[in-house]
Image: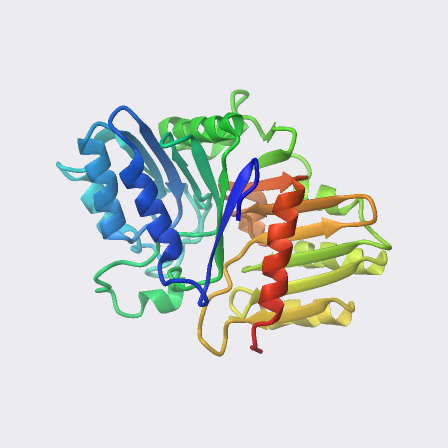
Length: 351
């Protein structure tokens, strides 16, 4: 799955288990002394992968890792954080961030989250992976029941999009390093030095939190009758997001939604509103208990085709509070690859 600007990798029950985490492990091992690895992610429980980062640092690779200290399952990252912050860890290269939020039940965290997933490598050639995959599985898995809450990302429907454009890869690595150095305050994103968006010609990358209009909703506002909008979403909980999709259908767009089977991430009332508006709505993954964690859109009319991908969810925290990333691309090859994957997902037998 290659083209001039991107290389796209999918995970899922039809792939080798752990294919995306193995991809990251291979890239860690390929960076030589003097190179760099810069990551930001949400859940990180994979201790073998963490050991790979430590080994890279020991051989002279500059490693930075920015990690959510207290994700929704608040203690999920604790073991990896203890390993990487120890005497033989990453030292100053590790930055854990926990932004202030609301009082929450024991074991949960209700607050702004560092929800971005960006994995940057300097060698063998500069590349930045953007997508939906978290290294959320451990080996050995010694925390009973946690994957039932997080989801098994080693088999989940997921994607990592490798940005190979040197300018884009460099800019995203700089973004991740800046977050590692300065990102401990929610106000960090609103300083004059932090761009809200970066335009690379073939793709515009947007960052959250941000002030002003939502770039994806602004994109969708230009589509109506004669348009086709396909949305793969793991979380749809914001009433405003649902209203946006309903308005598209009312303007005459053909809207289709593929989503997660669990009702906590996509409530029944969301399904009911979308279906009532004539939107083709389908859940996948239930029969084999596999999370549908993809986050992408295909947007087209007779003259325009756009692909949207990243870490963003259709939820209020994702809209207003979280650190998120989304790319909107005009690259035809990206559209075609995601469209082929969409069509493959339509063949999944599930309810």
